[in-house]
Length: 270
Image 1 (cartoon, rainbow, N blue to C red):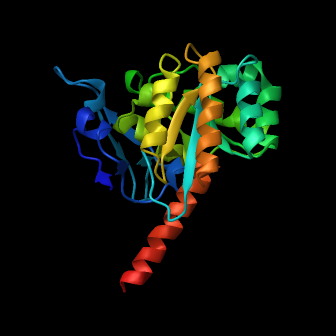
Image 2 (cartoon, rainbow, N blue to C red):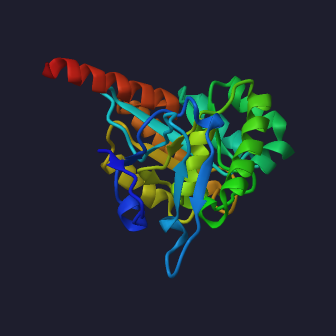
């Protein structure tokens, strides 16, 4: 399901939707200028608007989960890299032949560049989680572009490939943040399931009971979330779903599979 961005974005409606789309294409985004209207009155930051100037197509998509035809799931790992937890996550993924997408905090990637390179060399996707875990709804366009742009350049250098995805910290994004993502050519990835550090076993129980193709699962290898219980439950999650016939792929692979499935369904309906 896709929803169109309106002038005043209702955050509660946004967060309970499945995905959000701003019309057009991001190909010419870098050349376009964005004018952000300030927050007025009692409006929250998520009520801000941004309007691209010029006739070029300009887009950002937001995905919570997808609908591929195969039994595919995306595991997404936020807030690293860290020397304590990232190697443990990588070992679990290696054990089961699973792939994941790591949403990197720029300053942590700068502090552990070898872990970014190691993760990329193992076939995992590197993606943007801002430079310092910045809430994009609390800053202006220039700040949003800077925190994303600095991280983008660093990850491209360390991984040998520019990131194509962004996840806004806390899952918070508005029209101004979406415009910054469009300018950098990003698709925005949120999530449909979350394995927390405080209730990892219970969260994995729910995911295994409700397992379905196209899910995007969130967990952390940095910040306050990761702990020994989370690592144990991550191992159980990946082992159980792999045994059940699911395959863990990167978010970009999941999006591509979903696009193919939509084309196939469209052709079948003709």
